[in-house]
Length: 77
Image (cartoon, rainbow, N blue to C red; front, side, top):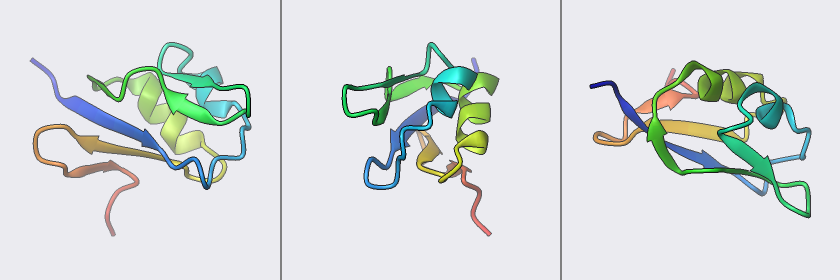
């Protein structure tokens, strides 16, 4: 069984570019205010969600391992 992730979007940072929806249409949606939110906060690890986080122009998406809380993205320095 693979890793499980907890995905969060910092809505105070999100600019509604829609890049996350382009990269992971099953993972993210924009609400009526064009703010992103994960379709499901706790999800199986997958490349589309990681690509969405990596390509967010304002780095509003954080991914952590569900069990340990260890950061997946952004990585700790």
